[in-house]
Every structure is written in C-alpha cells, then in structure tokens.
Image (cartoon, rainbow, N blue to C red; front, side, top):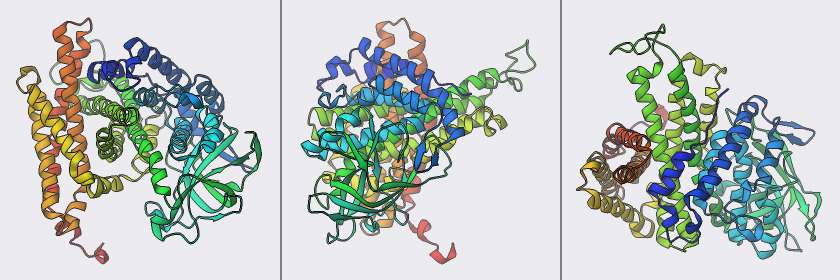
Length: 591
C-alpha cells in the first residue's frame, strides 16, 4: 500500500524562508510565527498520513454506490469525515462569525495540499463545500449567509457547484436548466446537471447545491445565466431541516479515477431555489467559486505528484536492478538499487524539482489572494487573476506527467495494482479537465488575461522578474539561477510580442500558441520561485545553520530545474512563432 508523509519541513521553508509570512504587513500574517504554523502543519500531517492516506486505496477499490436513492461513500470515509470536522479543519480560513478560524488562506492552502495529497477523492467533499461557502459569503444576502454558512463551514452540510449539462460543458450559454420565478421570491428549478463532484453522499445532513440556470425571458446565451442556492433538504425558518427538495441522484458516474468521490448526475424537478447574487449575473458569482477552485485544482496536480514521488523514491532505493556503470555500489547484493542509474535520477529530479517549485508557486499565489482580500490590494488581485490559468493548467499538466514518471520508476510493478501507483495517475488525470479544461485555461490566459487592464498585470510580472534579477545579478552564488531566469523571461516576452504583432490580423496565430504560452509562463514562474528559494537557501547557509544539508539539497535541486527544465521556454517560443498555418492547414474533412 502506498504511503504519504506530509512535507511539513518544505512547507515551513517556503512560508518562512521564502515568503517571510510572519514579517508581512498583510492583516493576520503577524500571527503566522514559525512555532504556530509548525503546530498546525504537524497536526494536519498526522491526520492526513494516519487517517486519510490509508483510506485512499479503500476509496479507489470500493467507490461510491447508489442504493434506493441514497449515495453511500466507501468504508471509513464517514468516520474520517467526523474526525476532520471535529478538528475544525473545514473552516480553517473561514470567518469566525460563521464558525471558522479566520486563518490566512496561505495556511489553509498548505494544509489543503496535505489533505489532497493523502486522499484527493475524500478531500473534494470539503473542498467543494469551501468553494460554495465562499460564493455565498461573497454574493449572498445576510439571511442566506446566516442560514447556510455556519453549517457549511463546519461541514455539517456540504456544498457543490452545478454547471455542466449533457449537451454543454465549456459553452454554458447553451444550458437548458430553467428557474421559474415564484410569488414568494423563490424559484422552481428544473433540468439535469452532470459530472457533479460530491453531488450527494451519506456524510452530511444536507447538501447545498449552487446551480446555474436561466430565468425565462432573460438575455440569450451566457448573459442570461443566473446562480441559485438549491438545498437537498429545504431549510425551515428556525434552521431545522424540512422536506426533501425536488433534487435527486440519477446516477453515479463511472470514471477513470477519484472513485471515492461521488460524481453524480443530478435531476432537478421543480426544486425550490433561491437567487444568489443578481439576476442574469450568475457567472460573476460562480467565478468567485471557480477562481478559488482552480487554484485548488492546481494544488491537486502538485499533491498527486508529491504523493507519487514519495513512493517512487522509496522503491528506487529498495529495488535491486543492474549495476552502476561507474562501479558497484552494493557489493553484498546481487545488484545495485535503481537509484544509482542516471535515467532514474533524471526522472526523480524532474519530479522533485517540479514539486518543490510548484509548492512555492502555489503558496505565493495563495499569499497574493490574502493580499488582495485582506489588504484590498487590487494589484495583487490582478496579478493572481493572471496567474490562475497558469496555476491550474500548467501545474495539473505537469503534475500528471510526474505521476506517470513515478509510475515508470516501478516498471511493470507500476502498471499492476499491487503497489497502488496507477491510482495516483488515474486520480491526477481529472485535474487537467475539471474546473475548465486546460485548453480553455490557455485560451483564457492569452485571449483575456494578458490584455486585462491594458496589460498592466503581465507587465507587473515582467517587472517583478526584472527587478529580482537586477537586485541579485551581482551575487555569484545565484548566477546559476539569474541567467537562466533572464533567458526564459525574454522568451516569454518575445512570445507576448509575437501575439501583439500577429494576433490581431489573424487571431489563430495567438490561439494556436496559447497552450505553449501557458506552459512557457508556468516554467518562468517556477524559475522565479527557484531563484527566490535559492536566495533564501544561500542566505541561510551564509548565516550559519544547523541543517546545512537541507539548504544544499535545495540549491542542487534548483540548479537542476534551471539547467534541465527551464530551457523548455525556447522550444515553446519556437512553436508559437511558427504561427497558425501548419495548425490550421488541413481541411476539417481531411482528419
């Protein structure tokens, strides 16, 4: 059975050595002293490694089942969910007035990585609830907040987001679900939604669905979409649960991975719903939920890679195969361990350098969200908005690739189920698809985010990189980081210039290069993170530390990324500059 050990030490390094959270002027960050964050992370690590991780295989093998209209979760999930609720983990970064602990989002994100890494399918139940609660918090009336949030923050009630229908996924303007206004101000919601994660289950007393639907007579397309709160059980005025609402589970989807999560077909038949936010402004309210969810999905790419990597490392150290070409390393055994071989090292270094860079990227993004929300910083909000498709798209693509590499370390033993490695790959695959498929993330980045506010935010990012390189350019210890970062940033700027010069006369020139641009941007972001981590590590070594090996390892890992991974930006630039002609050359009938 695979194991999972929470990477507390590395999280602490990012939080305190790189981001210097306790010294930040973001409201609430002064409380994030090292002893405090360590206590929180250690406790979360214990819960995830001892309780949630052992259930990961159980969830995969058993899945969820639908019997007589009731959805049952795998063995042990319900008891584990009670432990998570009792520990207050579901409301870690939610407002105190609704039962949360009001901790910064950056700490909640670090804890979230542990939960997702130990058991992705299980963690989605509380993750979806957090997103739904965030949407109600941002757009709900006081009455709606008081009615739903206390129980959602505690996960006595869970939440979902309902967008997709059988005939429409990305193009939500095609949806057919209707919401008929009623005399009492409520609506009757009718239609079918599919692919609804955590759509129903036996771990909570109620499920609060956030449902996109169209009010008859509204504008056509996406402009006519509104968002509604549709509870599984209606809620009485005194807060008690009333009659079952007109929403039922049509089926549990059979899928490639995340078997422990109940991905449902939901049927709405004159279900009572309540408008959340304004009429015909449903996407505005839903995006409050989706932007947070997309960062969380990017985190799933990282966490799956981390879990798979941990097991691959142990296997590479234990499995005896062949001899080191430079000399025998295990003379008392019949062969040397896998880890002596250069190609295995390459694979493990790919994984390790991605994981540690991605962790810094995710936590930096979370700190920008805190800066935007807690300090009302519009520039931070704009920057993290630019980064959201990169975090979601790049980290899930790369995270999936890293689970494949981890599986490959096992050879044939990675393909069979005995060692459990296929689950990491199967579970990670969905992260590239839901919350907006990665191709759509790339289109959003190039087609919308680059030009947002007149290109202000992408220019701010380039200035960030330029300033870091200028301030640290004379530091000989950082030369291996600064020069590759400069080169990669120039590639990214050249790609942006190509879009400006060629995208207007032929939009396909930009759109056909959007996926490459997203990956190029991701590599530059991780390059910046590695440069920042290298600076922190060299400073720690220069100041004297009792753990020099940790910081030396950090520098060695970072040099690998800068030398072996970051040069991918040149390949992406070459593809982008080839334009759309070869991409669009074939007539549709020729495929």
